[in-house]
Every structure is written in C-alpha cells, then in structure tokens.
Length: 333
Image (cartoon, rainbow, N blue to C red; front, side, top):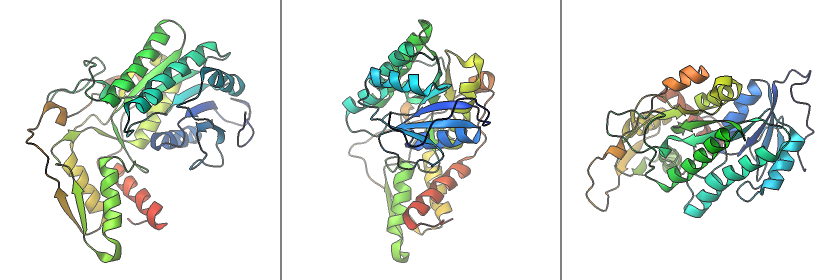
C-alpha cells in the first residue's frame, strides 16, 4: 500500500482523536474537510489520484477512486483501520453522464460493499447534494422529507448514491450518515462554478489596469449558498454524533440569496474595475420554480448540534483571497 508517511495508531497516546479515511481529499470540499478534521485532532489519511494540495502532515494513499475495485477498497480499510470514512469524492462539472455515474453512484456502491466485507466497521459520512430533491416553488424550503425527483443528471447520480447508503444501513451492513450539501462556496471554489468564473474573469480582465468585462448568464435565480468551513464542521459533527446513524441531513445556510447579489459582492470585494454583461439567452424563458432555492436546516441543529455561522461576505472574501493568491502569489484583498 504505497503511502506518503507512516501511519500511527488510531486514538493512541499521540493525542489524536482517531484516523479518518478521506476520499476525494484533493477536491474543493475534501481539502476543507481534511483541514477541519486535522484541527479537531484526527489523523487524515487522504485518498485521491495525486497528492497535490495536501499538507505534509496528512498521510496520502494514491488511488483512482472512479475506477477502484471493491477489493482494493477492502484492503485499504483493513490496513488503515479508520474510525470513520468521509466520501468527498465525486463529479459535479463532468460533461458526461457516464463519468458522473461512475463517481457519484458506482463508487458509493463499491465503497459500501467494501465496508461490509472489511474487518473494521467505521462510520461513513457520505456527502450528498440538495440537488437530489425536486425543485420547489418560490417560498417553499427544502426539507429532508421533500420529494426526491432531481432535475439534473448530477442530482440523479447523487440520489442513487444516497439510496444505496440508506439500503446498506437498513440491512445492517453500514453505519452511515448522508449530508446533503447546498451550493458550497469558499477558498478554492472551482472555476466551473458561476462565482469561480466571475473571479477568473476579474483577475484576467483587469491585468494592466483594464476594466474587466464580466460575462455571465442572466442572473435571475436565488440559491442557498453555504460556506465550506461550515460544511467541514458539519462533517466533524456527523462522525461524532451517535444519533446521526442512518440519517439524511441537510447542510445549508437556511436562506435564499439572489445570485446577482453574490456576483455584485464578489466584484465589490475584489476592488477591481468591472462591467457586468449578461449574455442573452437563445430563447425567451420566464423565471421558474427551479430558479429559487432555500434549505431548512433544523434537522442539522437537532441531530448534529450544528448550525451555519458564516455569512455570504465571509465565503466570498475567502473565495477571492484564494483566487488572487493562486494567480499572483500574494493576497489581493
């Protein structure tokens, strides 16, 4: 099992809380989760294709999770003997439905089979998505009992993963909790997202003191945005909460934020000169139910003892600071 660094013993006298196997550790959410786990005293065994962007203090195990077989996962779990497994792996921006099926559905099924066959029985924290629910009318909050008829291929693939986890728990084959995340924002927000695209256009378009032309699709929707650090705290709470076993819990801000406000906030925080241009759509489209989202988080308060604490300004500031540092090598806020 080729790893960077030697493994300690979970929960030993080194003061650590235990070892957590973090799948998808180099992804946007995975990096934030690993930071929170380490801060809370856990030993992080990071699993991903390449060890980029992982701290030296983390252990690293290279594995292409999209193609990993059940046997390889069983061997990893048996040797690492983690206290918990966090599955932050998956595809969001993949252009192909097949890739999303492999990463968001088949990986979960193989992981559950591995957990059933492995010697230890760690808790699994599966990161799902609120896009597994049906879009609701304006003013209707999503709850854990909302209808599950996803409007996108991404949502459908994530729902398959969630249902596989629920079936495994019901059969007594897993100790697991699913956290359904809303739209996560923070340092490292992917460029494929709307705010990631806006940040990139601001950085590229203002070189040499120019005024950036920030081109976006019509900004008519409202979304529930949650800070990546709040999400990471929820993951730590989920692996420590006995009452979370078998539950599906929404993790969100509990509010609907106009996307235009978020874009305007990002431009303001950047301090860059910019002109916002909304690209015309190919056909007339009225505002629909799918253009509004807010998520109820009372279950997270009850089950996990968790609630969101960070504001839209907090998350957008983190996004911009990280994007500017990555491009220029120094803060730009």
